[in-house]
Image 1 (tube, rainbow, N blue to C red):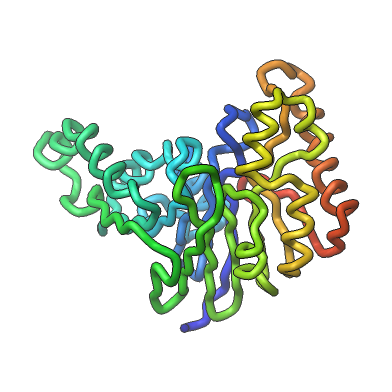
Image 2 (cartoon, rainbow, N blue to C red):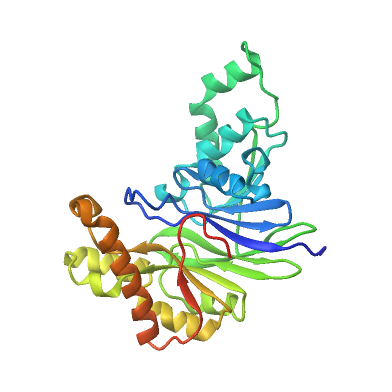
Length: 294
């Protein structure tokens, strides 16, 4: 592989909740002047635009051409039409290549059908767009190497998120290894794929808050997400150079916190880091926020 500087850019660190300070789940592994997205939650293209104007040239919206989907939950995919069409309006000159679990091809076909009127207008109407940029090459994947070019090798590995087919991804470039867990229960395979990596981006939920939830939600969250105290165990096995938390589930109703929302979220952010450390993980760990770069 030719060597280029590799960065991880967090475009969105939120959850299904409509949090005002965390966009929908999305991140980008940037290798030189090329970006590889992971997930496309709400607002993904505008977040990429913010990163571009902050100096990450590879995230200029019309250059967004590669994306990897961890699973088909809405919070990770409702930005998909945005990713297909907005860069095309901005004159993306090649098809979008998307890789994801079974169902991504059908989702793609339905989105293109839903926007058929717009596509027809832009191809044949008064203001004609190019005939390539809206097209999507959707590939349904299985575990193993799912993509490779002169900059990066991308390996998918199965994770556990309820009944959904779900994947994490390991990106290997000439200078770094970055692993993204996706939504998952704590698993040895994540630790194995992330062993010694430069950055492990992992979802997490606030252990101290789960007891306030109804029993059915406690059962659900323990089965399909990773408590901070369990993330400590995964990270202790993996020993990444940096652990970054994302998709933080605080177990709070953001609509009921009003003016106290920001302060309460900050408190729970700090508590998550404290829980990870108190559970025995002594490596570098930070909470990731929208537009952070690592």
